[in-house]
Amino acid sequence: QVQLVESGGGLVQAGGSLRLSCAASGRTFSNYAMGWFRQAPGKEREFVATINRSGSSTRYADSVKVRFTISRDNTKNTVYLEMNSLEREDTAVYYCAAGEWGVTTPSLYLYWGQGTQVTVSS
Image (cartoon, rainbow, N blue to C red):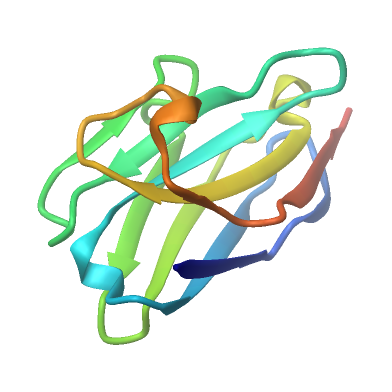
């Protein structure tokens, strides 16, 4: 089992920035690729970004490419999502998840956090 706890969400104005963190405990963090997903009200959970086990490779959804950066620190068992130039459309609950590298389908991730709310106001 891997336990994941997200933090760093909040209310921010459009154009602003936030950094989300996801702290892992349990099984060896570096054994898993990590992903960030988000779910807005009335919408399905969607892929945002993923990073491989070592942190050397990343993938992003087109909607966040350039604006968001995923990173990880395996010494701290933590994955981050730096979000810049936030837009109202980025408003959602953001989840981190542990799974296999290259996977963008939520159902294929093994472990999930409880989520953190990000609200972008205009």
